[in-house]
Each structure stands twice: as C-alpha cells, then as structure tokens.
Amino acid sequence: MSDEQQNDAGGRRVAWIETVAEAAADGALKRAYRRAADPKSGQVDHIMKIHSLNPASLLDHQHLYKTLMYGESPLSRAQREMIGVVVSAINRCEY
Image (cartoon, rainbow, N blue to C red; front, side):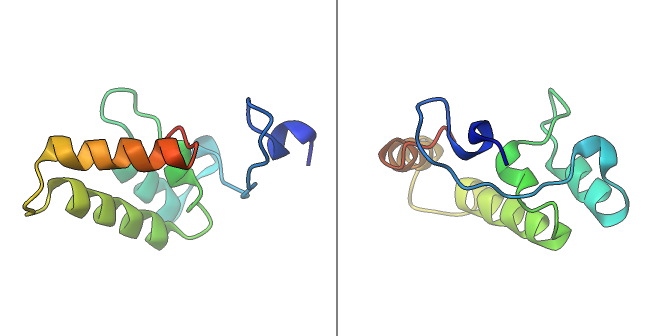
C-alpha cells in the first residue's frame, strides 16, 4: 500500500478498504452497483464501494440512507441535510 492510499489530500491518515472496481463487478455486486449508481453520472460513490466485498451490505446501506433522508420524520429534508453536513465537517469527511 502506498503512502497515497494511507493519507488524504490534507495529509491525514485514512482507512484503506479493498474494493472491487465497477468494471470488474459481476453478479450480485454488479446489480448492487447498478442500484447504487448516481442517476446522472452513472458512477458509484466511493462511500458505497466500501461494501463491494459484501453486496448485501451495500444495499442495506443504501436503504438506511434513503430511509433517513426521505422517510417519515419530524425533520425537514433541509434539516436532515444540514445535520449530515455538520457531522461530516466535524469528522473532516468529504461525504
């Protein structure tokens, strides 16, 4: 593993998780990638690719996200997005 893979652009240490590239995906993973792909770009976000060794967990992650962001809640969509931005900023995460 190179230093590039161990540090982010700001020089902070990051976890490295083996993933399967979209082009190499087949079977259940290929179907999961299709469901998780961005409708505009057709690409799968890196945060979803961390599940590539366990396609069922990718689909579960996507279901959890959609439930939290679009499911019934006393919070508005804007409030939910704001919470996500604040938590990501605190964690220094680009997601």
